[in-house]
Image (cartoon, rainbow over all chains, first blue to last red; front, side, top):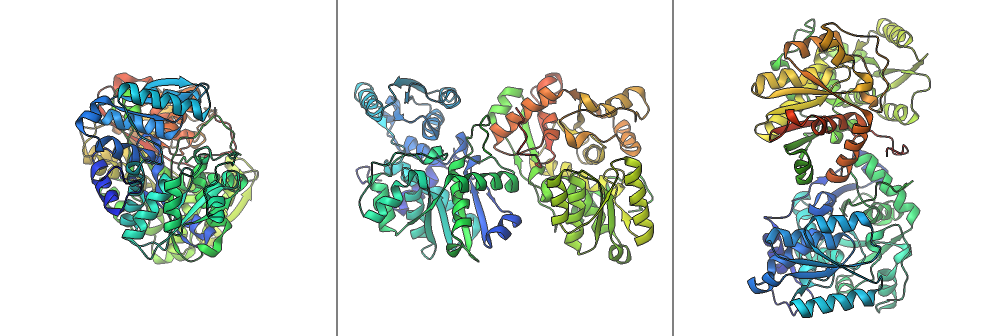
Amino acid sequence: MNETRAIPNHLDILAAAARIAPHAQVTPVLRSSSLDALAGAQLQFKCENFQRAGAFKFRGACNAVWSLSEDEAARGVVTHSSGNHGAALALAAKTRGIPAHVVLPEGAVKAKVAAIETAGATLHFCAPTMAAREGLCAKLQAELGLRLVHPYLDPLVMAGQGTAALELLQQTGGLDVVLAPVGGGGLIAGTAIAVAAFSPATRVLAAEPEGAADAHESLRRGERVTDIVANTIADGLRATIGAANLAVMQAHAVDVLLVNDDETRAAMRLLWERLKILIEPSCATVLAAVLRYPQHFSGRRVGLILTGGNVDLDTRWW
Amino acid sequence: MNETRAIPNHLDILAAAARIAPHAQVTPVLRSSSLDALAGAQLQFKCENFQRAGAFKFRGACNAVWSLSEDEAARGVVTHSSGNHGAALALAAKTRGIPAHVVLPEGAVKAKVAAIETAGATLHFCAPTMAAREGLCAKLQAELGLRLVHPYLDPLVMAGQGTAALELLQQTGGLDVVLAPVGGGGLIAGTAIAVAAFSPATRVLAAEPEGAADAHESLRRGERVTDIVANTIADGLRATIGAANLAVMQAHAVDVLLVNDDETRAAMRLLWERLKILIEPSCATVLAAVLRYPQHFSGRRVGLILTGGNVDLDTRWW
């Protein structure tokens, strides 16, 4: 694809699917008759918690890494992320045998730092501000000739994330609604593009925490809102929606359903208990939305993207 | 099969597989490169936590229920179990639309009682002694003409449990060792019979908690030991090994590997974290055994049966 284009199209998603196929898992789609009964709908859960590095983020990172020219690849990649994207990029770089650099705030969660380090990335610590992170990242880019792989603005990342919805459509054979969480917007953008092209009659909806409602507010106001301070247990959804990501949501008329943390926590427990899988709070927002807004789901075939399973087992979630 | 025979053979297991196929899940086999690295072995996890009613117990219960004559079926089934077998039998009876009666001790865990009731069984409460349970069970059998489906002595139950190992062999294409936990012995007996017939070069081993080491002690002494008072977090493995089950273990030279609760707890956490699945403590004993006794597993292809996922989320496991 033309890398100067800010927004990928469905062909980029097909190319991403082929590119990551040798490295990524085709994750299973799980169902539960008791959750179906509870929701009054047919729910199909796309289990990206089983993806490599424990989250869908590996798809986008892997697509970006394997799209590099030989020269770019030899120099390596860099990103700033203390979460799933950092570990995903480190592991993706490992699959190609190229250097990965990850910029982290001092004081980042030890388990996440360890995961990134285990995957073989070089760690760079900085002050815990966005300015410090971006500054150090830019410095490394310039000095080492690294390719920045942004967690959600990079069109190759967006295209990679869109492969989850593509697979879900292939595995389920027909859905009325696809629902994914929105944070920075890489997943929801890829999902919207994939569904619009491959299953145009299917509606795409986003779930977002009330405590990080920047996408919802941005759509409502018609302009990107950047001054919301996130406060939610859904740690993967605290990023501010990207401009390109918001544009995709607007172009595809993706509505946002807000849920509060109590609903998310209860939905997370239901998913653990009924599906017998470990998922992180961010993706429980999708089931919480189905249960809170039955008018959008009742009697329908609903695909829900469960984004990841990197959850702290020492936290008392309920 | 001849129901007066106490021990099923491999043909009974094939028949069971065909009989339960319309009702039971073919559960996935999961792998983890990090757990492989930790164990120095190739580990293949048979995920019966995804089985209906959340445990392998559904296989045996389903085989028993669908083996009944029309007359027997019309009268219904009974068992005494406050655990996974009770819920499994209730659900199996529901698949055939026949009555199920479950005898429970007063004070049984509410969540488990609710699960059995939700599946549509009639509950009968009695004093919390084995004599009271068996007495009430016999009374119901006599008065209502019910068929007793014992949790591990029933040969149809043993044959049904053996279908998990049969599937595992089919899914993995070759294993050096198969490892399953032992409680009453329904699963290990079915596993030993299946593996001996369908993959005779594969060794079968059992994992048992040190706090409920009756199978280990019975094999050591050459006679069934019934006076051990179980004390272990592996609540599914507190039953005393059955006589027929012990005989199968002896006939197939199944050795028992003992693990303590700390090892089980640590293995349970590893399984949650690395496989992103919810499993109950009983089945963590198999990974605990692999890590404690590397001499049996190092460099080998190992199948581990993860028995179930019905775990109390309000317990602090670590």
